[in-house]
Length: 297
Ligand code: HSE
Image (cartoon, rainbow, N blue to C red; front, side):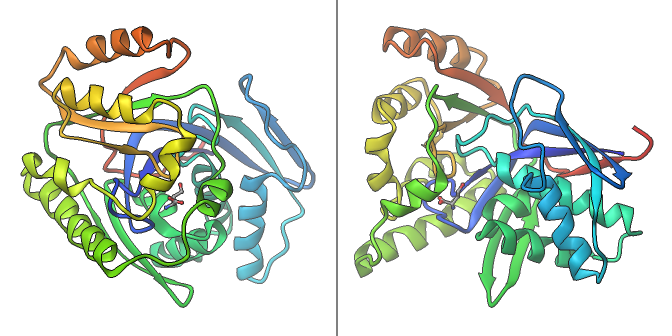
């Protein structure tokens, strides 16, 4: 079977650890039953080929939850989501492993159980849940259970991922955050996170520039993404509704009106002028479908 899993952009600025959006960039994972661990990459991206492969360990977790032991799997990975850039590549692996294993066992886990297990493996629900379900997801994890809402975003929006040539691990990017925040900053974010999801759903995009503003993580992470503030200024200068760090970085994301056909060319030229010729600029759309299983592929 083939499982296509979308990339995801978590946080959307103010919605730290709680908002996430799926986009139309997919890892394609081919899974077949096997008595041995037989894992390979279908492209030039190196992947772990042993029992530590994240797709395999996720599949093992689901088997264990169902009281079975998974000895092996044949896995072939087509990796289109750049790794360690805040675009949900590890969540895509977890979802592929869980969805594949669930299919192999005849679907014993329902969607809620898959959402819970995926978030437990990843540690936070804001990438795994939209990777599974698509759309805009609001998610809270409490006592190993995820309380979530998935909503389709049908508005006429385009996203642009600005992808640097350097990685930023989530572990490191979480390590630079303070343990406590002021009430002022807490109120700043919770009001904006609420405004972000409501405005995306209502199509009131002029709210997004205020709604995206964050005080809980971006100020501490920006210093590790050289030139990020200039890229944000550039994106706003070219008319973006919002610009933010995608997940924990290093990629940045801008949301624009889909009718704007000039943004990409102008942004590419500006990146080159800034000396960021090695940065990729990827135009994206929102994916409202989430992970898809194609049997027989
Ligand atoms: N919400 C997580 C973080 C997402 O910002 O650390 C990681 O991709």
